[in-house]
Length: 444
Image (cartoon, rainbow, N blue to C red; front, side, top):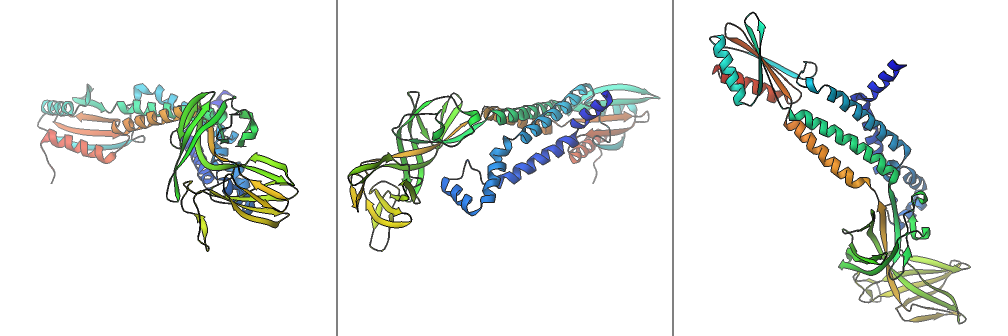
């Protein structure tokens, strides 16, 4: 039983297991990246996908990247990768005293011979050259007049490797923690309305098992910066538990680890609809987008299709908006009853339009903003350990572990043997240069 457990741990701690597992993980994440992400697509795109490609949308709901990284499979893979890296690191650390003992099967090796007039000259010349090149030396006598000079370099490379492996372990642990604790949703906030984050109805989508604590949130100011027919910035200020914060697309609000980041913007007109003088609808409606028609229904198949033109123009043949600046805001309304159009008109804020026994007025309008409402405790640690691991990897390759063993014979001949984990061409060049410096011989 103990032997079987040892074999299992040995396999989990092997490079083969780590490479295949990591490759499988990368393949899954690569495939998921091509699926629509429900956290980034607009409502219009989501509706179109649900209608035109229901199978693709179903796949994205279950196998897109945000779903994959929160799945039990991803957590299990991250856990086993962490265990594998830990076992591998422990094995390497146990061999710390033997880190310069490379064999030909473990590393690149080269051997070059040279000749001087006697043993003492060879010994002094080699010692001086190696010391000038900052090699750490150790001399010993092997018998029969043969001497051995052992020298090594690049000791920091081992510690760079250890730093890299420890960072990998931390990254895998962070991935598991992040997957278990991540909260990611979208919250729609209308300017001027005081709401609570504990209200599930605010969210476009939410994992109710990870509901955030109750914050009192309110959009105080909201502005849209435009350039011609393009939106360049959404910014404003919001109150979170009565404390005011400024925000913009690249400047989110962070409160107790939860982040509010604006992603979409729209207008919210107040519709007052009367029938035979009686109010049948009096509410603010968040129009889905500045770019397409939106609609709402109030009763018995009575539908109002609405489009907002921030800077309306009409020249008899065409109509539209010149810019997205609210210079001449106009609402285009179509009234449909059971699919049959009853009215089609344009209306501005403060106006009333009568059609049949009904009337519609827009006393005022405000605006809304969609906030990406997220919390991921692992992100900061992931970034920190990523750069620490990258630093360790750089040290690993810059300070390459390598060993030179020189055999000196009584007749003044010597043999330089070199072993290195990386860069065989550089090692061969270095050994050749040392031999040339010692003998004064330069090859043509």
